[in-house]
Every structure is written in C-alpha cells, then in structure tokens.
Image 1 (cartoon, rainbow over the protein chains, first blue to last red):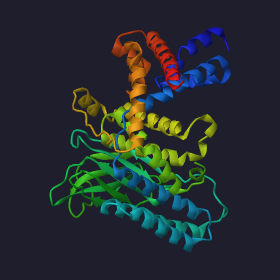
Image 2: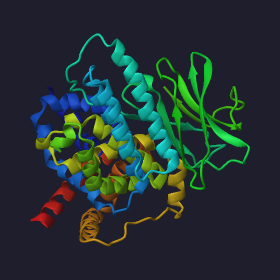
Image 3: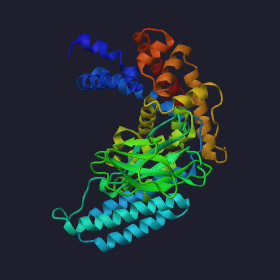
Image 4: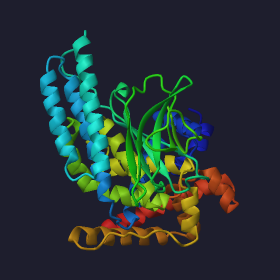
Length: 253
Length: 176
C-alpha cells in the first residue's frame, strides 16, 4: 500500500461512514480498508458518532398495519421454509400453513387477510405438488427462508400519491402479493387489475379496489418464473381480458 | 436474537416491537412522509428477517444493526427518486407531523436522548452539521453536497470527518 494511496483514501473515512461515497468509491475504500490498519482504527474511532445520529430523531409511531403486513409475510415465508424441511411431512405442512394462516389473519383488515390467505393456500398447493416429485434433500434446510419486497415504479402523472411493492415469498413459483398505497378510489364500475407480463404475453391475475385510505393488496397467482413484470391498470369491472391502458404501477422483475 | 436467528417468527415479532419504533422514526426523518417510511421500514425488516443469520453480536447491538439496514434502505429510496416530490413538500413547510405521544417512560427517555444527541449535533460548527445531515439524513453523496453548497469535494469530506470527530468527543463527554 502506497503512502499516497493511503492519504487519498484516508480523506474518505467520514464520507464512507456517512454512506456518502459512490458505489465504486465505497468498494475501493473497503478494499483499502482491508489492508490499512490506520484507516481501520479511524473508522472504528469515528463509528460511534455515526451510530449516535439515528438517536437524534424524535420518536414517531409506526402505523399498526406495518406490523400486521410484515408479520403476515414473515409467517408465510417461515411456514414455507418449515414445510420444505421435510419432504415426508406434507400433512403437517398443511396444518402449519393453516395455523400460520389463522395467526396471520388475526386482527387484519379483510383485504390484507385475503391476500395472506392467497399466499398461504397457494404455497400449500404448490409445495404439495413439489413434495410429490422431490428427488433430493429431505433433511433440514439451514438456509434462511426468503421473503423479498420489490419496490414498484409508479406513473406519478396519473397517480401522484401512489407507491407500492411486490412481496415475493421464498419460491417465486408460488406467486406474490402486490401492496399499494395512495391510489384513488374508483367509480363503481371500475377496478384495479393486476397483470403478469411474461415474454410479451400479458396475463390477468386478480382485481381489487381501495378504500378511502388508498390502500390495497392483491394476489399474483401465477408463477413469477420467467416473468418480466407485474403491473396494475384501471379497468371496467368485473375484469378486462387485456389491459386497456398503460400500467399505472409496475414492478420490473 | 438467538431465537430470531433460528427462524422463530414470534421472536422476530418481539424484535419488531422493540426496534420498529426507532426504525420507522429514522425512515420518516429521512424520507419525510409516512407512506414511504412505511415501505422503507417493511423492506428493511424483511431484509433483516432474510439476513438474520448474518447478525454478529460482537460487531454491535441489535439496535445499531437494525438502524443501519433501515438507513441503507432509506438511502436507496431517496436515490431512486421515490420521494423527491414529498421532500420538496417538506422543504415548503407542510411536512406531515405524527410524533409519538409521550405516554410512557420509555418514550420520554427516547425523546430526551434525541434532544441530547441533537444538541451535540447542533453544537458543531454549522458547516459541519450541514454536511453530516445532508449525507446521513438526506442520502446525498459528497459530490452532490459539494454542488449544493458550492464548495470543493475535499472540503466536504474534511468537514464530515472533523464533524464526526467532534461529535464523538462531545457524546463521549456526555456519556462520561
């Protein structure tokens, strides 16, 4: 390590700790850090100041629904992982899924509960099919269950207050759940429709409406394998056969 | 935390109960509106659930680990331009305000702790406070801050480091 390089990188210590470096700069700095005890000491010395910064924030209560939807997703994923741990325990898996479903549904709004039910039941059906054809494994699986939330891109010109995310359980073949906030309520004969785009084909998944709070959730019932995107359009009820407008919310996969 | 790492959802629920408030508060402070803060918090806690096996107690407290992940998720959201409109609104003084009610000794203590850390931060020279806040809470890179404040990048980096050093010493004095 050259002295000159050290001086260049040492200048970055504060910016590194504050996450203010670009990705490339950060990687370069971390490579330098591996070989430089002086910078390691400096990072360790200043780190407590950075860790104190979030403590300067006044407490704000999170909405209760955050915990509800989070735990529904976690329980769905955890139940799925437990099911995958044994290829012989299909009946037990179904019982666990039902138990998990009951827990997840307690205290949930009807729309969210329906979506959680969709995830759990879909997972049960597909995991059952997978179990029948499993040819390897069978012991415990130590890998953490995967539940991922992917942020959606929103057309702010048409739905300026909207945001959304796609919650994907461990096995993307089991579908997913689209969560949205800030969508306007629609007139009686209109619904929001969820579509899956795969190799140029657009497949209807489900429809939903939102309440006055602008929140909604809907199931993506098809496998996400090879899918290019999940999107939402506004359509005439009960449901359209093909999208009649460009998507207002879209998650690229 | 051991039970969380073993994949126990009930233990994870307790972890959320303990750290969800500070996590949401940090996200809200950074993105400036409740809806995006909720998305950021959800993404962060799902990420925590997925990566729970990676938590190492010898590298810091659970709170520090959780808030670090929330911070990175909020920066991702800020840099994806998800909240620019909302941030402009905040700058115009119409930011939503949903502060926690000070009903329990724990909340009162958190508020008092926030006051003391904020005082230490505000006691720094203004130019140091500004670059630290823009970077940490605003999610801006050093070059963006240099552009905004019309100063050389080296100056920005230097002020970040000096500010953190002074903050560390002040807080160590407070704690002592």
